[in-house]
Amino acid sequence: MSKINEKFKQSIASIPTIKSLPSYLNLVKRASAEGTSIISATNIARELDLEPIQVRKDLAVTGIIGKPRIGYNVEELIQAIQSFLNWDVKHKAVIVGCGNLGSALMNYGELKNHGLTIVGAADASPEKVGTKKMGITISAVDDLPVLIKKTGATMVILTVPPSEAQSVADILDTTDIKAIWNFTNVKLKISNRILVLMEDLSSGFAVLSFHLPFYKED
Amino acid sequence: MSKINEKFKQSIASIPTIKSLPSYLNLVKRASAEGTSIISATNIARELDLEPIQVRKDLAVTGIIGKPRIGYNVEELIQAIQSFLNWDVKHKAVIVGCGNLGSALMNYGELKNHGLTIVGAADASPEKVGTKKMGITISAVDDLPVLIKKTGATMVILTVPPSEAQSVADILDTTDIKAIWNFTNVKLKISNRILVLMEDLSSGFAVLSFHLPFYKED
DNA sequence: TAGATTGTTAATCGATTAACAATC
DNA sequence: TAGATTGTTAATCGATTAACAATC
Image 1 (cartoon, protein in one colour):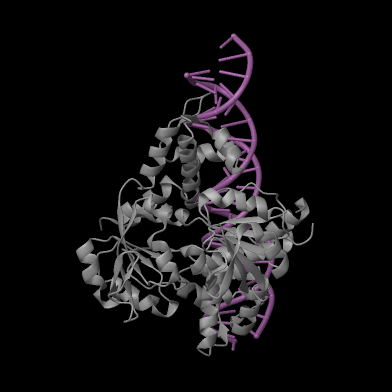
Image 2 (cartoon, each protein chain N blue to C red):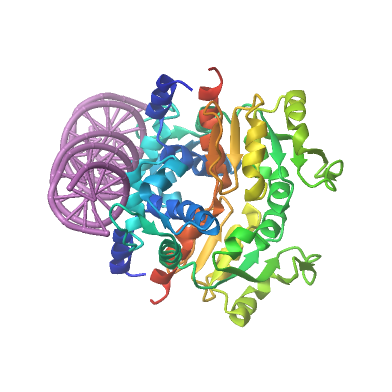
């Protein structure tokens, strides 16, 4: 990826802002389901325990235009967030590593609603290859290049044991995938044309267990 | 929790720093397993693709003291990080919601290594109650107060469907648990003596799918 | 109209990065 | 000793918050 793209991309929205958008979308969708057609930043802020100015700033990146004194059109806002996050298009993904976590992600409803479509799966253990999980036939890891080409997958969800992570990454480096959603705690060595997003559950747990003692006595 | 605690806690370490510590720990443990006894911030930075100054600042919060020109003692560093994150003590947790994700977390090895011990499980669907999953008998959601008291659990991992999240939170509010690791996308209304950590996989996916187009052509 | 809310511009705050003396 | 690395203090950068004119 070029440096110019890097700069451009960063100028649009900060990571915290991008991470906050799904919770806004979630809330606004709920409001829509309840028949609400207009919602204000003040309102959203109250529901999510945030400051109104924070909400306005975050929503602004999506290009949504609100009406002073009124707020935002609920349907427009839903479209704006979904479009900004590219959640209005399909993302074909292959899951590598069909253990408990991989299987859980295979039919995680919330992600399906955001364009994620699982088009294939692979696992290293020979006894799993050929069997089906959640309706998807499991391929061998060595067949990943073929599987990815055949399905046109642009993304891999990596849920293998840490010991296998890098060897899978080496194989993926030979394919045309654009991104890896990395649920292992291994920092992958891979060409930087592939976007790697770390999703380390330990990080979340660290925040939790670090803060726990401060909640012990009161 | 008192305001004083809040301030104190925040002054120790920022969230980004806390979130980065597990990856340091992971790397340093690997080095230890390979027989390395000393490691420098420069070295860690190179492995994790960070700046040395960032690594030094992050590690400093744990209280570790390095030797100029040498680096950090690997074993000391492991202890310092684990102790700082309270990963050297057991955290008893009950999993509420025994779907795919809940089951996956029940025996997620990495978290076990960090002190997380699953001491119970509960689910809303009557046909699951009484059955076992990963060796743990599933209780009814209404029996959570009893289960928590009996097991001495201090933490709940919430992996129920969004529609059930708040009603479970209402029950948990009557118990002595200190924290909820919330894997639903619902902002829980609960007394603030309970620490709630949102773990929304959609946030990670948002970062991924937003950046994807910038990696399309190069 | 009066008042609430938006979007923009400015100020503040905190995290990241830089510089450098201390030191093994 | 010379040189690499630490920890501290200062500078920079970016995100959050505040202020306020515009406006429905």
